[in-house]
Image (tube, rainbow, N blue to C red; front, side, top):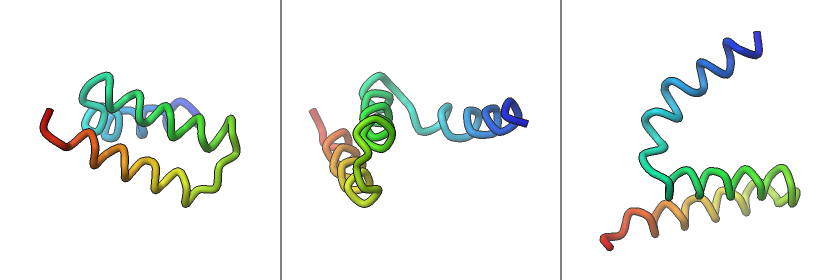
Amino acid sequence: MVGILGAALYTPVATSALGDLRDFALALACFLLLVQWKAAPWVVVLVGAGGGILLGLPA
């Protein structure tokens, strides 16, 4: 069951949302905020949204 859920998450989400290393780093940072540092979910959402906006800006 865990393998099926992992495959269901990986295929549509990771392959389309994580385009490069910067996207992966933002996702990892949000994950660590939730799991390691026990940040409130609304803080993680704000960090993720802010990071996504910054990643979308032209270089």
